[in-house]
Length: 248
Image 1 (spheres, rainbow, N blue to C red):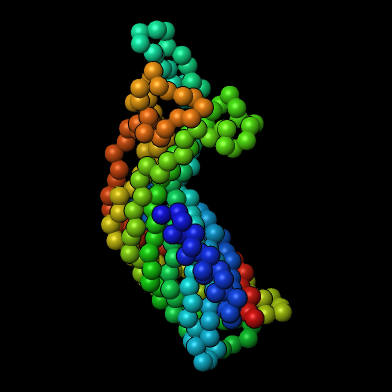
Image 2 (cartoon, one colour):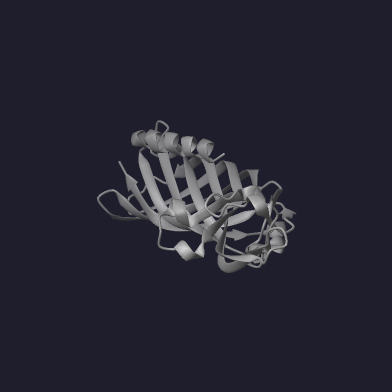
């Protein structure tokens, strides 16, 4: 799944060389409706938008990609493993859980042909990828190479949702075809299964493998189990963004 997302992002970035406008902004995602009842965690991240001319300065087509984290927590765990009735030994671990949303949308935008202040309206259609990943690190080797520190990296739950909506914004000319960009848009999203940040904060991690074959230097993700029940709801969100847009 990560390879597919990487290919999509690489293709969009390569295609952006033909863009008329490119913008980068800080985005906040606020859950709404049923999604708000399921989680109160806002998402924070970055948004990249590229726009292409459609025969006039008023109508443009393009797309955006964004990545937000709506829950990040870390905790220290001491895992005790016993082997064939012998005294158990302690494995000091650090567990990092990340709840994230990756979004990608096609955009049709109508922009007022003004100079200093450019209001615009837009419609969006695409998808969002919601996931919860867990990293289990060796606390004793915190300053080592990442390959040595990270024992297990696993996606515990992920889901794709259809996403569409509309909104608009204001661009303020700050010189040399550069604009300060304020933007807000509302996205309707289909149902998804996901974990909330409060779910992952107190996860109990158990060792479910064979103690006699456990290798601290080469653990298997399937040897660890996580106790949590995912939530399910529609995924409507209000997206608010501030950033900069550059016209080529």
